[in-house]
Image (cartoon, rainbow, N blue to C red; front, side, top):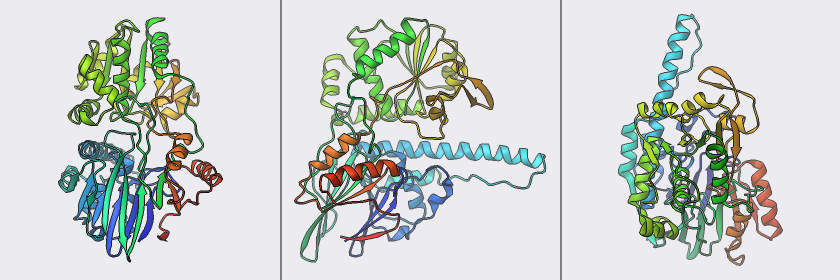
Length: 469
């Protein structure tokens, strides 16, 4: 068999790995590459013929793993996409949202083009959508959900086994057992690995014995705060922002995954009476739709979450919680002058309704912006976290008077220690080689050093390099 890493090689986004068993070609993930400096249109340039791919296996729904599937289908892929049941629904939701983002960017580009023509400027680059809703629907038709932890026979040579990894509802590591030339070979792809005791999600489960492992390294060399408690951290943030002063707590959060975990955590706090009732607004239509998917696939949430449901009812609903759907309602939150909590997307502040809330509150001394996840370099979130005193919002330079705070306790990725432990659970007698992907160079190298100290054979593959296994 052959392995070629075509995406997330020495970078984070664009996960795409090609596994070849004879003439049968399997693509593991087909993510959107939106690394800094990469033109989005480059995602249309596949390094293989899409119609030659027999099968796609999708580890989870996040766009850096699923976001280029409609482009693949549009370019001629005719096979099935295998994934878990929650991943099937969340993927369609996220891909549809991607189309909307593409179309909004295109509309803005048209506006700039008209403006440039009026100024008689000749140079303009169009920003056409990678794909449309038709292609998302065509992709959804190809998705075939399969169960966790049950062998799925792909053909006479290849069997697939999906193991839960936490990180996101439905996320799974893909483990392949392959019969080739009279020999049994095994290879596994982790996708993204979550962390233990994460709200709503089950802990990652360890892989069966495998000879080759393609492993993410997002948090290589980085360690989460293990001294603090999520409940106490949230209570402290809410108390300081909304009780000790008549202010508002604004929490940027990704609509799928992060928001559901945060809402459940707040539900527990208010249900236990740890804080007096405070209005909470979830201002993201996409978060509302994602929450419905979490309800639909409730059998996949954590045992803690299911027990809470049996005792208290819906873990994503409580007395002072409002899901904001219409844009008019969103704008009315600005006129809510009582202390409140506003949860809105996107998590890195690059678009979405969160920008409206920032625009109206960034110069408010009684507002607190509370980050609960990673913000990539170059994003507005990163600029606020590094302490910029002035930021550009909606074409205006605004001074930052709001308080800026953060916690990593709701990060969905396992840290360096979690990754090493996860890999260490695979017996060394079986594990021949580890391939590190999905990480910045510094993170990959830090994880590589730790694994080599434990006598693992580790490779950081170059994009397009073929490995004969």
